[in-house]
Length: 286
Length: 237
Image (cartoon, rainbow over all chains, first blue to last red; front, side):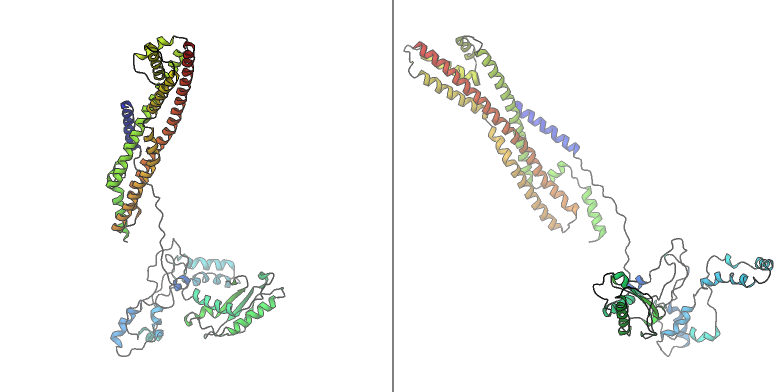
């Protein structure tokens, strides 16, 4: 029995030493996951998302003029009245408007065309003599022009408030993350509201065989108060016998949906002429 | 919770030792006692196993040698004289016991043949029982460890996890780094229990079959020898 106990003890000791040596704890290697930055944006931000350009220079001037700076001047000149008309802020918005992009491209082109009836050599000469405006690489924001007729507009009659409110216009300078300013576009929520109302009112023929033939594209022109400015124009046609029913129902829906008061006045330019697709497969798209 | 706090707690936990000894030392005293008991059981099981393996192989060899000598045509008297001088086991012990009884019946003044057969068989039965008892000794320990070891280990685990959860609740921190060491330490108890129980069960099964084989061999020899002696008695009577 002694031999057995000795052998067993020796075996256990060996096992213990081996296990201590071999069961060294290795920490699990957790792969670090790249973090994804998440921003919470409002509906309006979402509808005004623009494709950014990575190689664009960061905007040098702040994209929107602050109202309060203009207001400070006003405090000295006209302290008494406190009108709260927003329209007077126009002057502030006017300041950073850059020269519109198309002008640059347009200028050099039409001139040689006009001179085509003349001799070509002459035109070439003139063109050589002329300084090339195309060399300009970037639109440089033009300093605000002083217009004596609009001097009244420079006076801000608003009470100075600490609001970083900006006008409806966004500057069009190419900037990091802002390839083209698309402010004051019809926001997604407004468009969705318009669609939702039309979807409620439209009754597409149920159980039609080829629903893709029942897609009705209608152009709607609206007045400022959200009413139809002109009869809706149907832009698609179809051979499906049910198409007529779908089209008529769509037009009825457009008439019955008036007034479209969910559309904001500020964005009138964008919704005065809209095309709406009535698609029975997804009710509405586009 | 503050991310910085989490990071710090993870760092603290990572720095704490999770090796086998650390697991043992961190455990509560009940879990420690369970672990120690199971380790002692394991040592004991293997000691018995080694002992039994040696014993059975020796017994088997001794039986083979004795059978060879017995059936070699050698005079039984001589064989008895050579064997009775020293203590013997198994088959030799059986033979010596039967021969002693035989001799006593013949060497006395009064020859008592009546009942000699029965006496020899009785003596041989007793010897077989003693031999089997010797072979079977401590096998019950193996059976007990084999069946109870996992339960004991499980008890240690349950107890360890219970206390681990209590301390987690007290620390009000549920990050894995806090939970893991307690559970690992508790599971260690079950591991030791299984380590002790599995060899015990295997050895128990192997050894019981071995004992049965050897007992049958002894019985067979006893019957054969009884038959030889019975023939002798009938011839002499």
